[in-house]
Length: 114
Length: 115
Image (tube, rainbow over all chains, first blue to last red):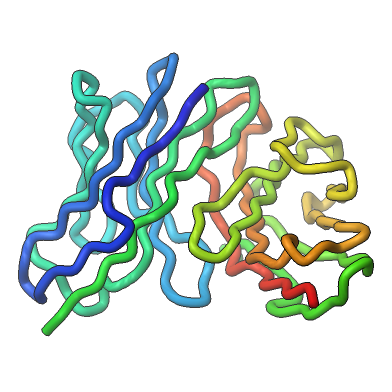
């Protein structure tokens, strides 16, 4: 069965610093992987997705993620953090079963300090 | 293009009551999925609807039920509410039906508090 592990429930960075949010997945088939962001009291917004094309995926707001099959990882990065990046980030894998179901990690809360 | 909308935004119920949450799909989307997000956790899949039928259910009891209408909008019904049902309920829509792994687009959610 698929699963997602997000290492670090809380990450704190300074404004302008590198953002690195870690995600490892488990999947019996080539996975479809997603990163979503959730701002306070809001729903989920898609940042980027991997669907077996290029291993380096660029998303919105300057975020990108690299699919590494050998490490079963899909870490999210941004070269320079902005105060507006403070939010909860969720990594998800699409279920290998017959329907379009997402399996989410527990989330990582990103804090950005001036 | 209209995104996914949900109503109401907030709801307070007491234990044992019943609740109905509503979702309107993004324009052009024919598949609706519902997720429960408890405080401090990632969303958990409840079920998915396509062509007005349930296609796939997560680990949720039968008191969680749903409907999809011909215009692809959907309802989530929860009977005999329990305190643990307090959560943010998210609706997501996608195109391509059940079998294609199309991107799911989420609504803002309905926050349910059960007292």
